Image (tube, rainbow, N blue to C red):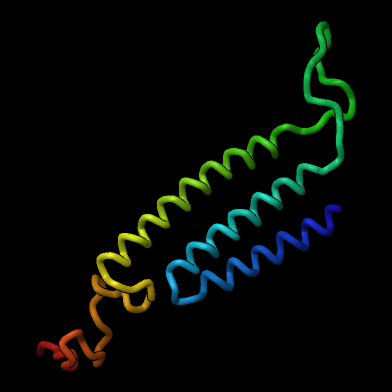
Length: 132
């Protein structure tokens, strides 16, 4: 089962990377979420998928019973899911606000705050004039 999950994590990571290289801001956000889910799947797979005893310490013992499941990867994934959901909500609100202000989700067209490249046409349609 672990090799299948490793292949799935690689596929999610590759898909997320492909989407993050697109010009559409919404696709960039979806790619970021796919990469986040791929990282969660890798952490989950590294924690082993074998069923074991719950990590509880019996009365009078100092260690849990032999063959217990490691709770740390599950706690890390739960925290990562909450953080990822917060990041998704923020990125979607940011995308919505950018679309309302700029009228586009094209990342290259969102260069309002950046100075134009030398020789590039400005918004008014005239070439950039360099000061001597």
